[in-house]
Image 1 (cartoon, rainbow over the protein chains, first blue to last red):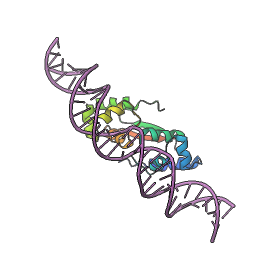
Image 2: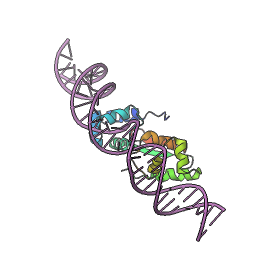
Image 3: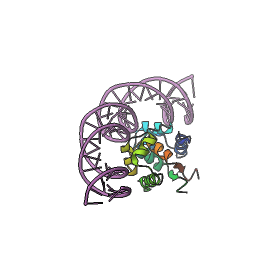
Image 4: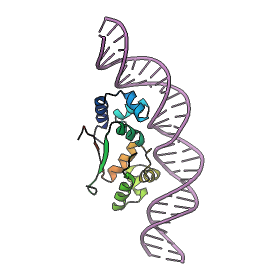
Length: 69
Length: 69
DNA sequence: TTTTATTTACTGCTATAGCAGTAATAAAAT
DNA sequence: ATTTTATTACTGCTATAGCAGTAAATAAAA
């Protein structure tokens, strides 16, 4: 589906921030299971939970299309 | 939280593709309620459903951080 | 205006994401 | 090698996202 490995990106950023999954989960206000699932590229996670994690790690999201370009 | 109006982007692309919410929902394999919710920026939608809609509309997602630059 | 199509809104119902707790590996540190 | 920490995995349980169906409100077309 989406070939990009978002889980690896998040895991890498988490490591570089010196955080454990549990710490990241607490900072983002989600459960540790959710962080684990996200790093495993589980795509059924909810957008708000993913966004909360991305925000803690200072990762921005951009949407691009032939139109928006 | 995320100030970007993703719902408006999707609605705009859907219109330009000449699709109704129901048609887009069917193409993406999700319910019409989900398309409606996404266009209303409901953030509790599931990532896979959002991705399915984005794919139909040919919208790509990018993640950026000070590290990934 | 009247009709038709589309969007918005609401309602049960079902499936499952997310949760805390626990346990078992794996990795790091001592 | 032993201890400590971190990650992965599994388990009930609860909350809710997603669904189809319906209906009302808007918009577009006739």
